[in-house]
Every structure is written in structure tokens, then in C-alpha cells.
Amino acid sequence: TPAISATSGDPDALSEAQTNEAADIEPELFLPGIHLFDATHHYFSQNIEKLSDRIDSVFGDDRIFEEVSGTYLQVRGSLVYGKGGEITFDGRIRAKLHLDNLNDRLHILVSGEEDPVLPGTVISGGRLSDTYNDLDPAVSLQLILLERDLWDIRLQPGLKFRAPIDPFFKVRLRRQQVFAKKWLWRTTLSPVWYNSRGYEFPVVVDFERDTGRGQRLRSSSRVVWRAEESSNLFVQEALQFSHPVGRRNLLAYVAGVDFEREPKWQDTNYFLNIRLRRNIHRGWVFFEVSPQLQFERSNDFKPEPSLAISLELMFGGAYLP
Image (cartoon, helix red, strand yellow):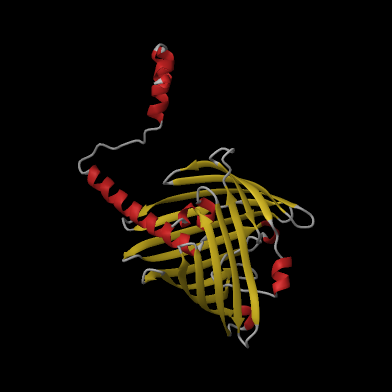
């Protein structure tokens, strides 16, 4: 081939090519029984990761939006029925664009929502006009520096279109590995700088396990430090168990608690919900019903029930029939 002939007459070039090739080879231990451990690691890694990707893809999880390759579009509209019969609205629009004339490691991201301090799992709404007016569209570039099984590193400079325009710069580092054979351990650091409010440093640690028959157990721990509230820390712990119900439905049970450091370490909110997600059209249109319950300190931990009904459309290679 031309690539071989280009270096075949040049010993120095050939040596350099061999050196580069050798540098890309992962180190390997030659110990008795190591191949059995490799096979076990591969089996659990592959199965846990595939199940995690599949469930997060169905639920339109933030991780999928951050890590998916190629073009991706998510549109969600929700009605929230609160205690007393009041009706509020919530919406989400975000997209990742892969342009053929750009580098494969460069994407354009468009988001129509403010990044939450703690994502949580309870959908809360407002008036339809407020939902529209409160959107802070953000456009950014995502540059993939490293994308491998264990490591994923990305840079994301961008602008939030508010008055005045708010530039920001985000770094996202993700490390994952198999833990105790059957658990997947994923740590994600996402330090970000906003011109309007300074630095934020969110850290997310997930432990998850495939419990068989398409079931998954996940523990998520989130910690957020913000420069504008430098003496405070926001902490959230959530447990989620999900499993399929037939071929078209996915059911998830979620329970969690929020903490903050100021004025002292204290619990600020408990939440419970059930998410019944149904594929209603070719794996890219989903209907969701979610009974929810919150207990907020600001409301003396009185139960606040609500019911969220959502329709979500997702476009991208993962959703092709």
C-alpha cells in the first residue's frame, strides 16, 4: 500500500512508525491465570456498560447527552399536576450537532435550559409563559481530547444568551472501571467557569450493577461547590432501581436526599418517585408517567405530591429502528 511504500525505503521513518505503534499498545502482565481475569473483566464491563447505556438512552439521561457520538436531539414537554389540582409546565430542548466538515472530535451543543445545581429526579414546573421566558439558550463547542473505555476528557467553551451574554468554559473528565467484579464505578468531574457567577465544581460518583434480566441498581452521589457561595456545599444522594416491564416499558424507582453545609450540615429535601417510561413509536418517541413526592425543609418536611406526564422525542443514531 502507499503507506507502506512511503516508509519502506527510509529506516528512520520506519523506526519512528514502529515506535508510535508500540506506544499505543496497552501494558500487559504475563502471570498465570491472567487471561481468565481478562475474560471476566471484559464480560462484566461489556454487559454492565451496555445495560447502563441502554437504560440511560431510553431515559434521555444527561450522561448520554454529554457522551453520545454523532448528532443528537432531545425535546421534552411535561405537565405537572400538583397538590390542590394546580397545573404547571416544564420543557427541555437540547441538541448535539456533528458536522461532516468538522473534525470527528468536535461537536456543537445547543441547550435551552439553565444547568441545575443538583439535577435531582423530580420534575417541577411553572407557568407556560415563564417556562418559555426563563430559558437561557446556550451554544458551545465540545472538543473530545480523549475517548476510551476507561477515560473520557472533553473541553466545552460556550455562551449563554441572556442579558448580558454570559461566556463559560467547562472541562469534563470521566473515569470508569469495574469494581468488585460486578459493579461499574464511574466518577465524573465537571469544573466550569461562568463569567456571571464564577467557578463551580460538580463531582458525580456512580456505582451501578446489572442484577439480571435487564435490571439495574445505581447509587449516585453528587457534590457541588460554587464560588458565589464558597462556604457552602450542595450534596445529593440518590438510589435508583430500574427494570423492564414487557418489551416497551421501563420502570424506575428513585429515592434520594439533598444536603447543604450552610448554615450547618442539614438535610434540605427528600424525594421519591416512580418513572414508568413507554416506547410509543419506534424507540424514539416516549411517554412517561411519574408520581412524585417531596419533603422540603422549607415546608417543614410536609409531603408535597405531584404527578408529571411527559412526552419526549429523541433523535440520533441510537434511536434508529
